[in-house]
Length: 512
Image (cartoon, rainbow, N blue to C red; front, side, top):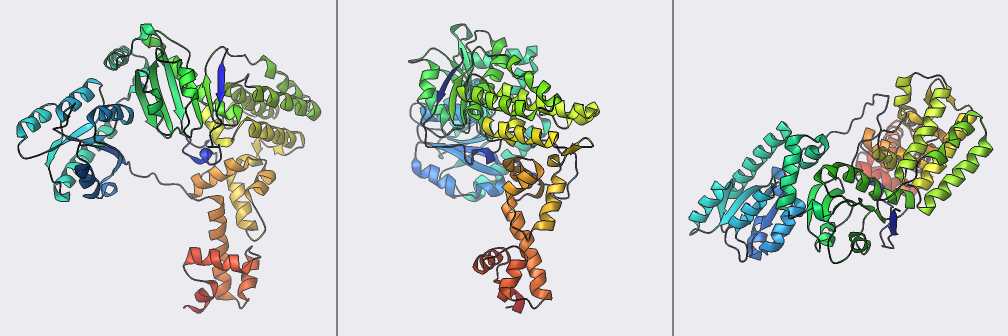
């Protein structure tokens, strides 16, 4: 049986959906004039020194972002630094040579043994050049002397960035890529990583996936674990099941904010890691089914037979039966008996039945189907919202809103055209959702992707742009101009106008 633990944390799903949903937007069939530009890579730096003033000196002595870096962690105790290095795997680390317990030299050695990809820059005093030389022999990129000045550190940052850029350009396979490729070279590397991390497959391992969890690595500290990847809000770990308490029980106590935490079934062979990652990832998405932050452990799962009546009801155009089925599905999801793969199957079944009923070509069908779970959670907040939208789409289909192989709801061009033509009316995301049979959160994400603005900001700038034309080319009173572009409240109109233009409507008109 699968096991689920729901969180009573004060965090909610509100706002979490807008975080980088680790994936891309569903592909559109249309070309758009507004494309979000990719931001340059920002590399992660870490500072390790047992003297707090040195840490502060390093933090304050340079504009890190200017040179392509952000400091993701600092630590003054070397044992904790080693743990943090393992969790964060920073791109570059500034390490003090002389520290109690674990010296900078030993820290670099241990990180190399764990096959971290971190570049090291040594921080030293004048009398420590023999240690510096040893660190350089271990692959350290360079060194800087205390007290640290900007003119000394900037060349090292530039050198590190050049090296990291080269590494990125060469597209060196990550640990996750080695696992997914499942080739001999990768299997050997993974086996070595497990040994170096102290993990014993024979003793039982689990994969843990966390979504938008803060400081989650701290919860795993009672266990021997290895972080495989981290980025875009998702972290993947391998942990030894043997610990003071069962892993599920331990993680169920996690009190931080998160979307979901998934735990795989127990496995004993390194070759099983890939399947375990998929199980844990699916389990982490259980928050989507529960509608709240959830800790879930993978187990035996139901099949899809319960959902096969849906196609028949759609083909019979029986909305009464469809409504009853959707209500039943929602109840099943609420019990926690089904997983995100069932919601995924449900969505694609509806789309396949509707598209194929129109004798559409197979290439058209592929444009409407979701290819992974990430695409599903981009569109919907939870399973309840999915069911609501499937009802809406089914109603649109039975009501003749589907024609010529295209849902109006799939055309963002039509949405933009509508907003551009009706900006002066009282329009909202919910109104657009109802008009185009789309999910309002999905429409919001499309605006962010294709015009690099939220719907609210796009509408405000559109209205203000038209207001500028009226202010320059007509004698309408200010409040009438506001009404013409969709603002019935003159004060609110002036406030929005000044926020965008930098002047009040009156100042803009008079040229003040």
